[in-house]
Length: 456
Image 1 (tube, rainbow, N blue to C red):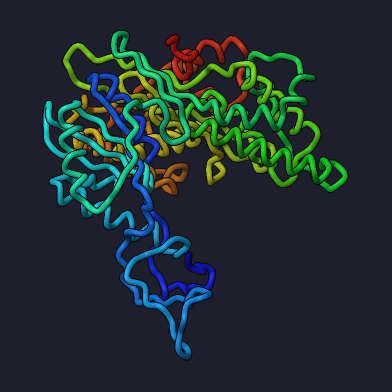
Image 2: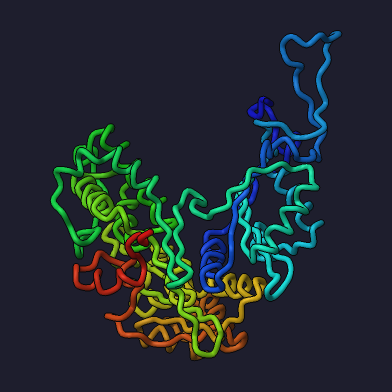
């Protein structure tokens, strides 16, 4: 192994990290597999970091026990473990091998590859040295035979049950799927199980209408050991949201605001959210895609904001959720970067953040040969914000919003990619990510995002 800590950037290395598959691309592939009833296998490249070709001239000290004469060093011909650039150089070589097998790399996601079309379409998703192959079984077997001729050796997993630390279940007969993270739930239970046992059962992840405040001085902060446990718990919950539990977005965003200055109230809210997670262990991302009658795949973008709702800085909270054939593939809840002076502006900013993902998704789908219905409906519940997206006017109240305004306008009027439309507040599912809602509202929308584990 190399002493990577002694390498100097710009001299010993330039590229550092290996790119990994985008979360949205991964969920699109899962919907594609389910909707088109495709097969899937995973394979892990063995000793991956020993295969990369070095661009820089790199020397290492001779290992102990090697006979040397004077001040001699070894010149590396290829990467080895602990070398800073090993992951990046492996990814480059692996990509070249795939493209040599007639695969095409997606221009939007460098870890998504495709070859063939129609019934012969085969796609590969790369996460460093772990790879997911989706397509018809005949095409998968053909690829694996070709790949054996390369210098890479691999370990094959025939069944797609685990990928990216997620458990995956799919039922082709009912066209239903489920993605969960039981490993992370077990970690949360190990960390907070004893404390959670003393907390009453709740039906929502966060106290309705409750806003957390940072501690104003050290006397209000919890002890250092509890502070560390608080940060650990928030990190675990955030990873749970990443793949399988978008219903926790608002509660965890509130907790993340006070990571460095948590109070007893914040710790109590953390235990409330943990209690809900432990009480719903079998819940995961719901995948029940529905194809439209015209045979086109449908995208829907939902966005919402809660104006000036953060008592710490009066910034608004924005949220968006994107659905592909009714399956959630992208979501985010976060405080906006600027203070909005009206609810319409806050809604407009939230809409902008949402439609920023639309071009990315709209490029991924045609690359995979998926016909998409356009324009994509972007649902918001503020008439003033819709007016801003449709009218080329400038006033003292809106002229400072130029860049965002022009971006949404171009996507809607010139590119014809999106169509901003009105939806009632009660039916806007993205409201789950802007505030801690009551039980009635929460359960009204929860079923579109998560479901119980499929029965075997």
